[in-house]
Amino acid sequence: LSSNRWLKNKEKAKKRAYDHAAEILDVESRRQESLAYSLKVNEEDFLKFNEDFAYTETPDQLLAIDSIKKDIGLIKPMNRVLCGDVGFGKTEVAMRSAFICVSSQKQVIVLTPSTVLSNQHYESFLERFKNTAVNIKLINRHTKKSNKDNIVEEFNKNKVDILIGTHALFTSGINFSDTGLLIVDEEHKFGIRQKDIIKSKQENIHILYLSATPIPRTMNFIFSGLKEFSFLHTAPTNRIKIKSFLKIENNQLFKEAISREIARGGQCFIVQNDISKMESLKTRLQKILPEISIDLAHGKLTKNNISNVMREFESGNLDVLICSTIVEMGLDIPNANTILIIDSHNFGLSQLHQLRGRVGRSSKQGYCYFLTPTNDLTKIAKDRLDSIIRLSDLGSGFFIAQEDLEIRGGGEILGEKQSGHINTVGISLYLSMLKNALNKFNTNDEKELTQTEINFYDSSYINESFLPSPLERLKVYKELNSANNIDEINKIKNSLIDRCGALTEEVKNLIDDTKLSIMIKKTGIIKINSSEKKTSILLSTNVSKSVFNNILTLVTNQPNIYNINKDNKLIINLDKPNTSERRDIIIKLVNEIT
Image (cartoon, rainbow, N blue to C red; front, side, top):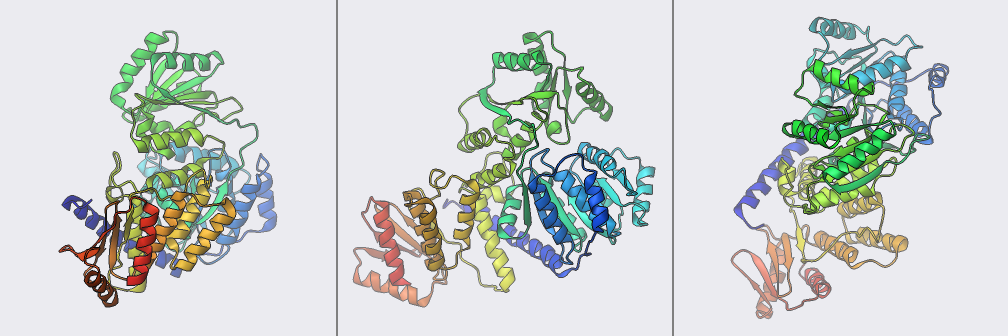
């Protein structure tokens, strides 16, 4: 951690955090200062549209619709995330929101991350709005240029009510002046830049994000209050929990899993994301099971080839589809109820959850096999796979997103096969830098906000056994991170004791470390490192005068215990193997010098 490379990476990440903070504040402040259209609907018309829904709404859907209806009825632009697993009714909520917007004589844009999903939404919207006069159009990469130009012209003349397409819509010359609502589906599939382009294009429109598993960045926005949130957790009737297994890849497993699915009249997905290995896998499977029909689907095939293969699979003429992650979204084949995911340790939690969601979409039992070549995996990969197996209940997408945030935010310094400044220094430190940057811009304070570090070389976190719910653990982490004084920390501590009983050693350490961070925040103390034999306190160049004078007094009066070295560190000679004792001594010392 003391290496030049680490310091350079940290500085780059810090600069990026300030750039990112400026972008966020610029976009968000413009949205907050803008006035959106107040979208209203005739209740009689709305009731009639709702009655066309073929199913009974779940309580979650009704609550979400009510919240959105209130939001878009205001002139403050809505910024809401609607989270729910596949088949839990997000699209119906989005359609009712679109109906309200169109009823207010304003246009709707539905944005999707893939051509497949845009086609699926187009068909769904046409079917749902068939009893209305709403004009719905689609633009994606399969749309001919002449047709695309006509659709854009019609949209700009307000002749199109709902326009569905991919993010290429934003480079199509579309006029947003009469757009009242933007619906972004599969929010987690868009990059940060794409989403910020979406918002910067038009600050005065209501935005509804749909996602089964929001990305960690969005989760932090939700918990920080930058986005409103609705959660659909009630499963559709007759839906059965998918049985999930973590297995070592082998021929016998392939044979048993595929044979069982075919014997009950079903079909199988096999996800192999390395296209170069697909043909050899196909040959291998044909040797094991010569009687089955197999084909391949991946992004390097032509549009016609992919369409033909998918048509064959959907019609039941193929037993097994070996595919890349192109099947992750927008595919609904109720007869395919077994999926085997090769090298599952290389996928993210959200991706694994989306892939698992390709099966079990009817009343049939679904099976998902997460395959790895060996048990020798990195800790973060093991944690991820443990989470996906444990969180296999219906409607677990949101909790998987929380777990993803918790796993990534647990202090990992370097990620595995990750990119970007966040992954160079770890999401926790980056978010802390971002928070400091936001504070700095908000207060116009050019004085650097010190990033404090506390390390006693022991465990300080909230145990799952102490507080089982990932949501509740995240809330407590957020409360601790947002606390500004010791009284607030004590309130959190007392609340935890009331709810969960006596604090574990790890939770007590976390609370004490948070107290220490607050105590040293404005003193010029940057870092406290404490091992069995030695403790050091790193001072910044702008350490407060009173703190420095108190430290000098200690060094003068007790030179055998305290001394300051050339690196601006106060060295404390403490021979205390017990970390609890050391913590208490350091807390008492910091109290004295501050």
